[in-house]
Amino acid sequence: MLWLSFFSVVIYALWLKTRNFVEKTMNILIVGATSGIGKALLEKYVEVGNFVVAIGRRQQLLDELYKKYNGKVLGEMADVTDVEAIGMVMENIQKRLGVIDLAIVCAGTGELNPSLDNELENPSIQTNVVGWTFVVDALFHLFEQQGKGHLVAITSVGGLRGEPMAPAYSATKAYQINYMEALRKKAYKEGKMITVTDIRPGLVDTAMAKGEGLFWVMPVDKVASQIIAAIRKKKSVKYVTKRWHVLAFLNKHMPWLLYKRI
Image 1: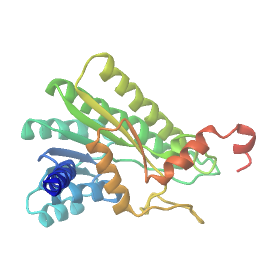
Image 2: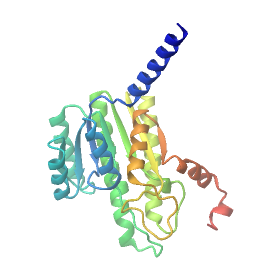
Image 3: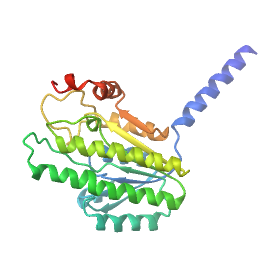
Image 4: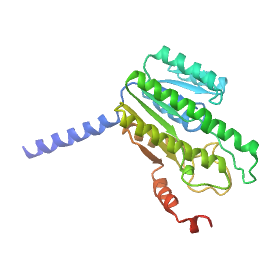
């Protein structure tokens, strides 16, 4: 009978492993879903049966997603910097879906700007701070009304230290990191059933990866898979891909005397 017991243990272990990878069908909202990480996440979530509302700036790309996934994607055009317009869009989405289980904020921008040209810095501030704050606050309030929900924001490893090649980008991502921590603490202290997850990618092979000689540029598909795994586990903070956790730790704790020379 020993073999039978062993066989039962193996079957149970396989069942648990399968169970961990099976997600219930969800209503998902992705802000910034027409390209890069947002689009990769949308595709993976739709492929396993979820319904996704995609918010993006380009109507043509939203229409293409709608046609490709046969109505499993609802596209809504809005720019996060236009807070009035995106506010109306999000209100309509809530009325249409009733419940949003998961909201992922991927919208963001940044330029290399070592010359400190204000015209290059301002879009990052308007998108990554002003518009972004409006969106995450609106989503947090929505989840408060629902009584539960999971709020995810794609911040960046670049927000851990100031970077002279892209000052506004690194500063605005630092703002996002601290804001997400504030919301996570708020949900905890108020006893809310709201999960707040801060995803911090390193360099990813998207249009956002700019410059020459980039280090450890990760494929977007791999990044998206690890993000979904972190969301499933309801992580508070997750660096992706995994190797960036080591580099982020070293970067964050590097003494200024050394950091300023890099």
